[in-house]
Length: 101
Length: 173
Image (cartoon, rainbow over all chains, first blue to last red; front, side):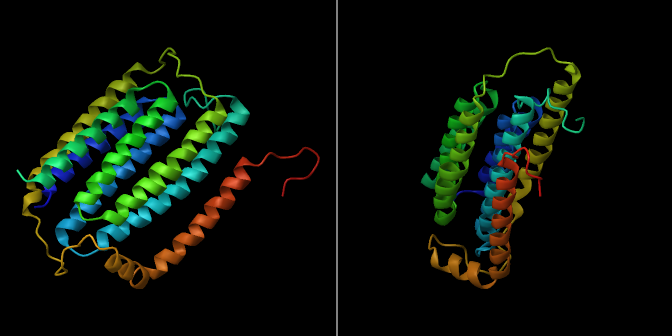
């Protein structure tokens, strides 16, 4: 009674591809950031799946740290969005040329 | 087909559908709410992979804290729905789609061979219990645990400095 690794990896690949599509095709910075979070979660799912297959708790520990780093990244990234919005009144990535003040 | 596999596939399908809604939807608030559902479904998947602690922090930290932070910032910025502007580089999207499909195909072709992987670590498979995870976390991973607390403090400070309004008159430090 366990989930086969193939199913876990198929779900993980599908979510990662969706996240990549969102990150490349969308122009709203919030949606791009959410897509990156989705890719992080797909990777987490793959790590937990491999960890369940190999045994022990190493995989779960790695995912724990990945979630903590994602929280730190979200805080700093959203702060950058707010700072950019104050300057440009938009966070559409086509209208922001950050390196050209 | 066993019950755990059936429920996992169902949760994976729900996660995929709502992630697709997130990517496609033009209103950022609605994409946020869609990805919350997707992360809940992923938490159900974690439970079935005998990682109930990760399922709990997926719900509490990811869906509960990180995405609520996203929601607050999205409402603070008062974003309008993404308007359709003329695309200056029409081929960019085409190339992006081709690249994504190629990546997914390559990864899926490797997934077919994942049946060859067997438990080689010599460790017993993880049970649902949290205690052995906590023992491993606070013994062999104690140093990264402390390092990550410094990282959280640094990102807290960084977020404060970025969000702060600079007062005119006082020199910026």
